[in-house]
Length: 167
Image 1 (spheres, one colour):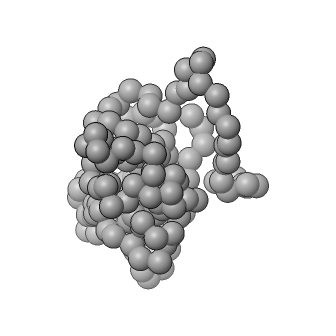
Image 2 (tube, helix red, strand yellow):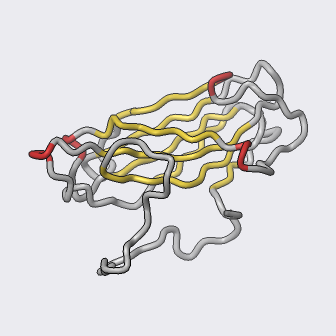
């Protein structure tokens, strides 16, 4: 698509931390007696501004509506990207995106007020983009997992942030 979360990190001075926190998600419907697993996936796009950039992406989850957070994923430095773009960068093709699958959302987090957040720690490198955040029962999949079949009814649906402007 042509919409995503964008963090303007190009030429920022000093160290900066930006967070994206989701609204509560009801994971209490996951049946722990069936040993069901939950996969959280997302895509990001990023380029370094220079080869020495060591910026961080961290993913946290909460089982108590944000009173406490558990860090579940860390990507930084050349693992975040080893590509360098000295001008202000934004993704231009599907090849610019990296997909991450996390299967470490454990049964303790199958609650009705599950939260997740992304934290980007920048230090004047290049811009960062986040998109296609999915949480679903089952093993990691690159197929679209958010579809609704014709015989299913959606009883309640919220989109956040509402309203949103630009990015």
